[in-house]
Length: 409
Image (cartoon, rainbow, N blue to C red):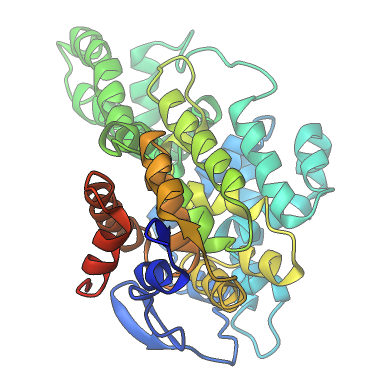
């Protein structure tokens, strides 16, 4: 049958790009698969990198999620965290030591009765399992229980400068705590970055004895624009929306991580992800995910959809351990996928309906979970281009068979 794309012909297209599944590519390195699970002691690693930047990050983290907590409450949680991560280096560490940073940080919230009594919504988050808890805290960041007035209301510049001169360390912590409670949607890195610009105002203006007031007026008028610039540069999801012209990276990711799921679910995942990216470009619709890495958002979202205990266990790990763990499972799952048989006529009809690329991206990615998103997408786009060319010829079936014999990656 001239117009039948035989199994061997199309399987060749999909599988000739498939690499040996006894190994995988991870962060640019070729690694042999390991049958023994490797575990990273995140808590012990954190204990080796404690410095001022780490402490400020934790102050922001707890202040954003526990807006009713005082600075003393936050510092108490910080001390409890430091004790916990130090214990992770002992001979028999707590199982939570091997989870992601966020899970470790949130665990200290859920053990602190004072914080839970002051923050009822946070207490509700702590009643959920680790993955749902993380989503719950994200929702709490995006919908804080109340709005705070602007920083420094009712305090004169002279008073602020006196506080700055008397105790710079205390000033920094106090104002960082206040900032974080107001900027709950920012990542800790963005919040501290914005705060640094705010702090520079005091470092500059408090040194001036004669023009102090005019200095504060000038600098504080400029500050909102500086903050908007930092927000724009750190809004990774909006930037991704502008440069990912045809989307589909989330579709690739879904197909890689859940090879047995149907195309429709992968398309829905991609649509929802790109809808978030578009939302992040609206100044009035920003949420905390807008400022996270695009890959971090992908993993966070896919983990809420995982069903097996093995997959859920992977999702408790830090990235890149989470990626490696889920990829190992996906590789095994991809081996059970059936072969593909499709008529060339139907294939070309998919092209006319603008569905061909999505179908190829899906089929190719779920059969190659060991490849990264970009390589899967690039290879699928190449196959799509060649099939599109063949569909424009008088004999698509012969054309596809002809180029598939010489197709190489």
